[in-house]
Picture: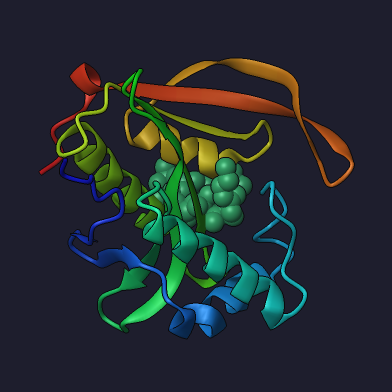
Length: 186
Ligand SMILES: CC(C)(COP(=O)(O)OP(=O)(O)OC[C@H]1O[C@@H](n2cnc3c(N)ncnc32)[C@H](O)[C@@H]1OP(=O)(O)O)[C@@H](O)C(=O)NCCC(=O)NCCS
């Protein structure tokens, strides 16, 4: 049986999404050490490069096991890794998946993550033939919510205290988009 490649390389006008390697450690550490970047994430701020190495090993292990994982986000004009995005999970029985994303603070508010999400939605609904793609954010994470809105996702509701993160009970907003709703962007 043919294996599905969940993290094949994707390209958009300004960005490339590709598999993460150990050579990306410094670029990843650079944003993951920033407390503002991890303010609304379920993962802890990285304190040492070893935290980044653990993340990369975890990510690479999933590639090896043919499991859905993260991509590194590469800015074409600098060839620098500026963030990561990927599948939180894929449930093939239900044609359903969840995505997550993070970007280095220097690159915020230039439309980069919306470009990334559009790319993943096209791939997920196209090649992977998914029917529903979800994204969740902390209720107060306006920038992340805005990315969901800009990429055509619909608000489905507030999941009250759905997570306990860094010792805090967190309200989560749930967004999703169905294959038949995918806007034609290009
Ligand atoms: C969320 C995140 C990925 C967004 O990436 P980005 O490339 O800046 O996103 P975009 O530029 O495509 O869109 C951001 C939108 O949010 C808006 N925005 C940003 N900060 C905002 C704020 N504090 N209040 C209101 N709107 C805000 C921007 O104006 C923009 O909307 P617009 O295009 O309508 O003006 C980035 O902020 C990030 O990495 N944050 C930290 C990690 C994180 O929270 N990840 C998501 C976990 S669910």
